[in-house]
Image (cartoon, rainbow, N blue to C red):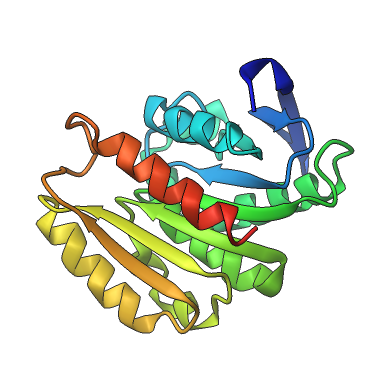
Length: 214
């Protein structure tokens, strides 16, 4: 898959009277789509998520990176940690993806980062078998603890080996997942996987997980 075969558009997702901007990239003959749920204070411009998205696009998967909050909503710091609000927003955007001409019919996966992992898992619990797989990068799945036993989608938890507190939180969440699951500790990596080669390792693990499941 070459970059020239990937079509990227800026989309405006209208939900219940508000508009959320997003970047939608669809390779020719896409086999599925991964919807990104970013962490607090981040946006569709997250360099880490965009790096992962590019790797996924080159494996034939469409990607959607969008702002979960409007600019006004984001000014209220508490909204960034309102997992219920973010989950509902992701559920509504997923419905949009299922209806949108360029993406309807594609199998769907979720990629969540930091607190975005909790909203991804809650939305996956809501949709059941309609979600093919979930990947969490440095995530806080513990913030969706009550929903975890209801998740049916195969779930991959990726955590940096130096991110000790988040490892413990992921281990607790892992015990509550009843679906196909895997917890991978990436050695010598911090929370944001800034170390050389570590984000690429995240991207490759993510691509492998999605390519065999959605």
